[in-house]
Length: 306
Image 1 (cartoon, rainbow, N blue to C red):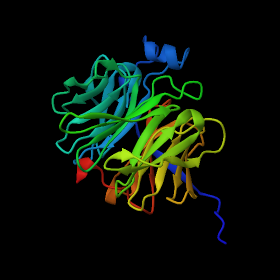
Image 2 (image 1 turned 45 degrees about the horizontal axis):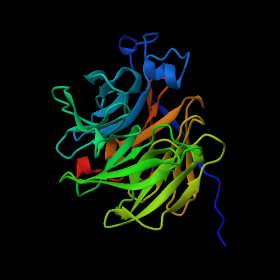
Image 3 (image 1 turned 90 degrees about the horizontal axis):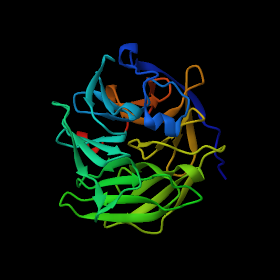
Image 4 (image 1 turned 30 degrees about the vertical axis):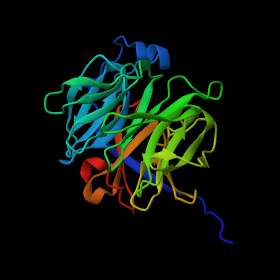
């Protein structure tokens, strides 16, 4: 019998840093007051996604900004609006789709910076607080609706929005659904359930889940955040407060443990990009930096790049 081996330790180095001129430390933010009271955060990064030109977009939740980071690590503000953007995914046509906790799913034109509502409610009922999203090859958009759910209130939801406007609630019993990703063949969804410290595996039949189960648990108390998948089907999981990104095989084996070079940071979410799509770019939210780590398997090409 073959037993799982301990994960290989990898180090992620700093790729880009939000410059001081764009940090808003000490400025009022109701999101910081509610989620990180007393913290003097100049930004809080999440939702990384690459466009076809190699630019990396990340959101700044408390100040309603979207940063554009060029391949040579130059940072600028691509958009700013009155919201709390969290997840971000890029459509094949180049538009930025944003999971905004306050407003629902928004869409941004990266050329003009204009942000508009795209989906703000489900049959007149507001969302709990959308978090992250992923496109299927069909253009279907899967997104999580986390709100303040947890083990005390397992009512978080996962939705599917189809290009023709149809909206379907796939699950309504999630204890804090957070990051979301599709397997490379799109036969299943992975959903990070933060407050139960595990990832769910939801096989899809005609786009809806069947016989869902727990894929893997993380060690310790604090749960998973963002997810990403590589071409071999390995799942990258941001273990935010622990400061590790785990790479887990489809069989549930911990292959790699990626840490910041100094061992610190809050590593929340990640996206594959860079040369040959072999680098994992990781948001270190508290410190306002993007880390980068080269991996042996390239990332799975997302809808925006097909």
